Image 1 (tube, rainbow, N blue to C red):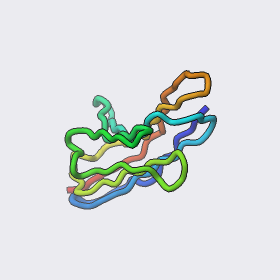
Image 2: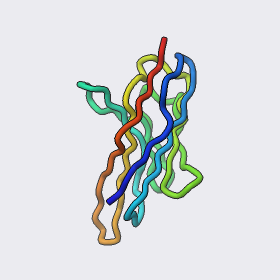
Image 3: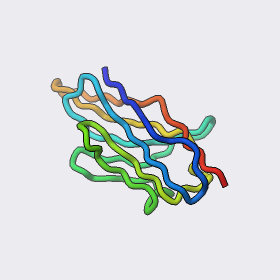
Image 4: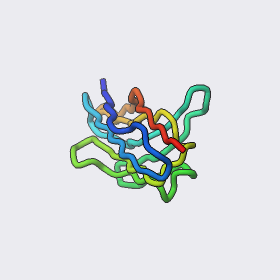
Length: 120
């Protein structure tokens, strides 16, 4: 079993910045990809940013140029730096990871989510 623990988030004014962090722990052989999605109640899940094991990154269209995903200093951690935040960025942000096992199987895990609120 793998646990994803998120930190960061909170309330910020429009134009401000926040930093989210996510740490994966448990029975991990390797992590294929790790990143963030956001989903407000009643809305579709949306990609925020994701980083693969080779360092490749992918961002949601509205996040490009404002958000930056990076590996954390500790193993199996990622951080998301969010700048120039807008009220429409208000959402619950979930950490996600695709974990690979020595058997060759893979599994996707999700964190409980952290609230980001941007006031106008």
